[in-house]
Picture 1: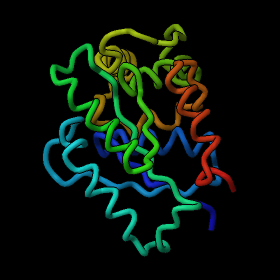
Picture 2 (picture 1 turned 90 degrees about the vertical axis):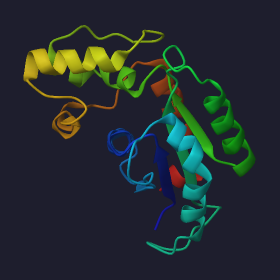
Picture 3 (picture 1 turned 60 degrees about the vertical axis):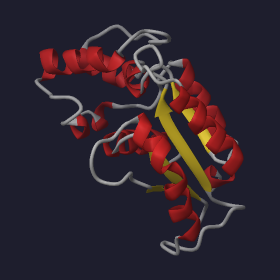
Length: 189
């Protein structure tokens, strides 16, 4: 078995979208989700539970024991500081990732910017392909496009957009994420 990407993100939906994008680009990787505990989701909860999720990965025996030479713990979160009042949370996550040797991938400004810069999704929605770098609240724009054009409620129906993703987003933070993943032992088959 190749390495395992242990994926931690702000929400269950985010993890599933991120895993889908990563699998499209790295088809041979094995991804395990480390979901946050039940209840509210978001950046504050991610910060609070991050080290517990890391411990779960490191103590896991399914599908096999954690192997620090082959496995990676990847933390993906939005960088919606433009709308997030508590920037200390982002600094805390960064420090924890550095201290624990985790891979931190930041979706600037939100994960939805990655989706809105995907050629296949833009074609399907008949919208202009853009990078969405630095634009505020891409999640609201995506939700509006999906509702107006496809009668899809986002994020509730996120799974209905997965077939329309090519994982070729031109968003800079998505391209940075792919470059980072490409260098990791857990993505090498």
